[in-house]
Structure formats: structure tokens, C-alpha cells
Image (cartoon, rainbow, N blue to C red; front, side, top):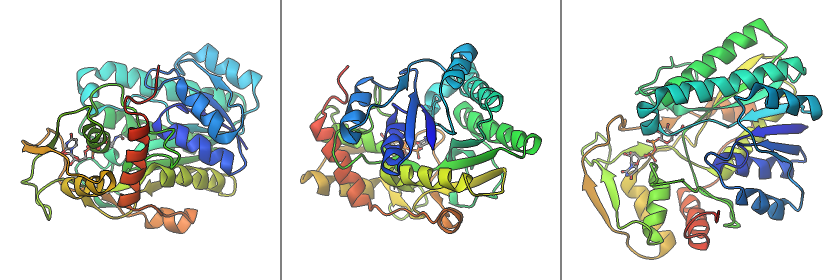
Length: 337
Ligand code: WQD
């Protein structure tokens, strides 16, 4: 299929572009590069040996989005593009609602005008609110921050669209904690400023860009007191997107929801120890107070995706750390401008 990947220059999007090409699909990328560097495209072309068509614009621009669908033959869309920083969303809620929902409105309207019926939507475990332990897809959804609400709302909007237009084939994919990098070490996670997330922060400590890791609380009701999360290698996540896309070509369900996670929890200190093994030395850290909004434990029940997509995670936490370290040590300052 010819697949439009929105946010395809981003962390998860770029890894999914590789997986799509490897699975024999054609890819077109649209990205506004507000949270990605153009260098990624060259890396993808080097890895695939193929030209990757890229359209650089903001999907909330209805005319440009329409023009893309009018001038290219798109069979399916994987929609990653969106703002995703929890803390920033609390400071700038209108930007988050306008951008995340507006881009989806513009995109889905163009899809409907051009009879594109397959959509894979990038959702998040954050829609389980504070009830994320052993989460199954039938749990009610709610959020504790504007970013999370944009995901809850987009899921609901897409469910309503599926009722109104049962010819649509939509997959809502709820990710847990994506980490890792392509084993080549040439693409990876490159946060634009101080990393919010644990793995990139540890990686920047290891490469000498940050002094030490701050562990946000060790008084949670977890085995070692630190937060437990379901880390999923971005390569496994990308494979899950290809599996979901190909399922849409054969299912009779207008809309389906799948958790993409390992089903296993790893604590902050366990991840730190695993990263130290990858680096071969101890890394400095300090336990500080809890971060507002954090839950103690989050991990998926991935059995629905395992059964219906024939997909499961393959990579271990050690591989996630080793691949992250290879990317970070080969690119100490991330992607060049
Ligand atoms: C993981 C654990 C922290 C940083 C976030 C978003 C979620 C989703 C995935 C988009 C927690 C601890 C972290 C640090 C730390 N994103 N931590 N020191 O919060 O589970 O999920 O990313 O969909 O919406 O909320 O991931 O990596 O920020 O935190 O101790 O410097 O690491 O307390 O226990 P999180 P995270």
C-alpha cells in the first residue's frame, strides 16, 4: 500500500517508515518539522536505499492537506503528528487542542474526500488516566492533563466517525513507553530540549550532556519504590503499526483498539541498572521528590494485540538500552541541524 505517515520525521514515525518499507509498502511523509530535524530524512534514505517523498507543512493547513491528497495516490494513513509534552500541554492547552485535534480534522476530511478509508491513529496509554496497571482496551478513558485529553477526545471523535461512516477502517493504537533506537544507531530519540522522559535523560547523562539523573520519588508502592512502566522497543512498536495497518485491509470492523506494550513492568532503578550494563559503568543519580501527575505503575495487557494482530514485543530491556546507547554515543548531540 502507499502509506502517508504524518509526523514521519519524528522518533516513532521514522522507525515506522523503515518498517513499512521493509514490509514492501510505499511511504510518503508529511511533517512540519516542529519537533524533528530534516537530517532524519537523509538517514532514512540511506537505510532504505530509497527516495522518501517528504511534504513539509502543518496538517492544520486544510488547503495544503487537500492538495497532497489531490496530487498523490494515498491508500492509507498512519497519523503520528501531534504535540506530546505533558507538562507543556498544561501551560499551553489551546495550542494542544487546536494543533492535535485540528490536524486530525483536516486529515480525516481530506481522506473522506479522496476515499482513503484506512487510518492508524497514534494514541497513548495516557488515556487510561491513573488506572494504567494491567490495562485492557475496554477500560474507560480519561485524562489528567490537556495532552492526554487530546488523545481521549481524538479517540472519541474517531469512534463517532466510524459509526457515521462504517466503510472506514480505523486502528487506535495505545502505546505505553516507547524507547530504544534502530540497531544501526543512525536514527533515534532526539528531544528538542531537556528530555522529559526517562530513557533519553539517562542516555544524555551517560554521554555527558547531563550531570546526573534525578529519580522522581522512591516512595511509591512498587517493589523498589520507584515508578514502574511498560517500556516497548520502538522497533517492536513500528512492527505493531505495520501489523495493525495490514489488519485494516482484511477486517470488517470499522474501528479497533489495541494496546502496544510488553505486558511487563520495569522500575526506574531497574532501567538505570540495565543502561549501566550497556554503558559498562555506573551512572550518577539522586532521588528527589515525586513528579506531579506521575502514577506508580503502568503496564499493558497486550493479549488483544497478540491474538488479533499476531504481534508481540520481541526486544528485551537490555536490547532497548544497548540500542539507545549506540544511537546516543554515535550522535552525542542528537541530529545535526
Ligand atoms: C517514566 C518513569 C518517572 C524522568 C510519558 C508521558 C506519556 C507518554 C510516555 C506520550 C516515571 C521517572 C522520568 C526523569 C524519573 N507520552 N522519571 N526521572 O511519564 O511514564 O509517560 O511518556 O504519549 O503520555 O506521560 O514516561 O519517561 O517521563 O517517566 O525518575 O528524569 O521515570 O517518574 O516513573 P511516563 P517518563
